[in-house]
Image 1 (cartoon, rainbow, N blue to C red):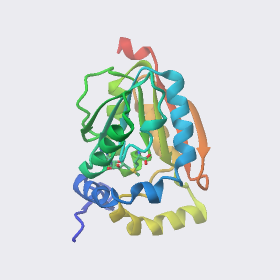
Image 2: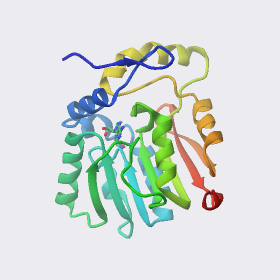
Image 3: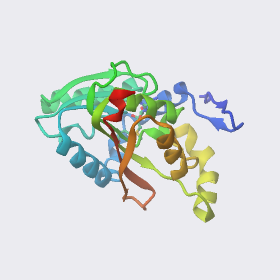
Image 4: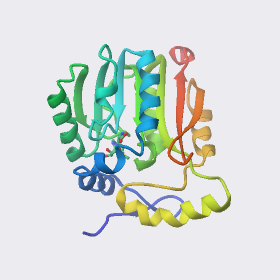
Length: 229
Ligand SMILES: C[S@@+](CC[C@H](N)C(=O)[O-])C[C@H]1O[C@@H](n2cnc3c(N)ncnc32)[C@H](O)[C@@H]1O
């Protein structure tokens, strides 16, 4: 099947929504087997941080719902994803395990969340930001639907700024792109640039998580200054 790709502003081959959606529709049957174990420590840390805050949680890019059983029972979780096939798996999981704290699951683009402003205590995105065609647009949406005082918790790849790792990540990029991944273009400076331009968002934690130190757990708080804006 031909992959649909386009050039971004920098003239590089980039993702579009259809490519990503199709890639994850194909991953759905084997996703948990391939990525269940490898990302489990990171997910555990992100969910522990979420459970401490509690309240209403939006998990963007919830995928097969692999994290859903780990949320504390008193939370209310809404899961969204762009891939129907991934979400079907999540729905089966919710039904099979009778997860009463899952309030809903819906196909939704991270760049156009269909929720009013200030709707959630936590917005959570695990291994999603680098899979979205326009990550900054998605981060803007996460900030918008988060209530002042709430936390944005992301697990995400942080690429190398320089050196051999950067070289390898750039070489790998065209290979993994049709699979729905991006290895390069996500140096910490990119996240920092978004933070600097975002309204009333402050970094509270950035910590490496396995595997290989290529991923970080990042916690960002929406400050009360957002109320005045
Ligand atoms: C690497 S998987 C991570 C799944 C899950 N969060 C986990 O921890 O394993 C990336 C997920 O993001 C979803 N995704 C990619 N682009 C998206 C978008 N624009 N809006 C919503 N979900 C998206 C994919 O369909 C996929 O389920």
